[in-house]
Length: 282
Image 1: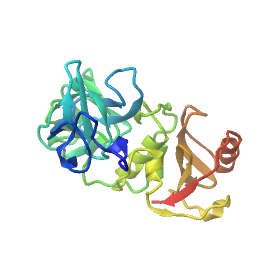
Image 2: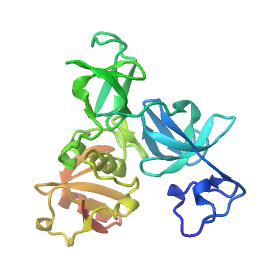
Image 3: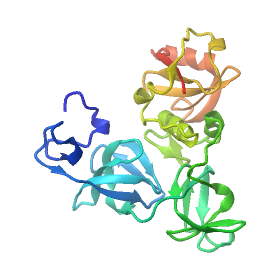
Image 4: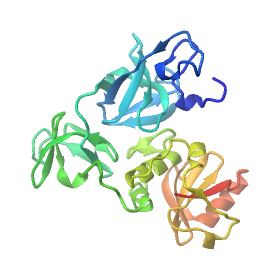
């Protein structure tokens, strides 16, 4: 396993993905089964227990290649989009059926049992979730899995948001949650990943991985060197430069997605022992 990032490599001493045969050592190699998330979201954890750290979340409709399912109700696999590996609750997954056609564009939306906003919602879906739409009218989109979603809240898969900062702004006030990636709670790199993906830019999950996004920008504290949308990195942290001297980020100081003066954030984080380590321009 030397040289492989464990977060992105479906390999353990006892089990590994077939495509890694000859690259890693494992007692056995298996072909994965593609599943999809049927819950609002599915927690991906570092171990098969609800007490294990939340590493990230898989959104509704997201594909997961599962390599093992335990009798205790956990599935070990790899997320198809960003490659993250970990354990998910098996009851949050189902065999892949159909292909997504649309993505949720609203911060959060409701799924109604009939095309009537007065009917009690069946579920809610977060920004970036994927669904298969079978028909539409002027008001609702009907999902293949059942239920009706306000048409204003969905967009075709090929739709691209124009400004990742504007997308991230929608999450202002959302609670900070380590490993989170939904409108119920998210962390700094989860916010960046969602915002960039919405504009058509693929983006890895964790802040250290994201330091390879785009191209480097020379920064020595002068905000004139920055443009809106630049990514500013500290060790274990990332945020968007929002223009006009502001930093937009999900952070544990505010315990929320917040916007503040970049100079003030740099000074505060410096007091905790960390300096800006990189700036990248997607």
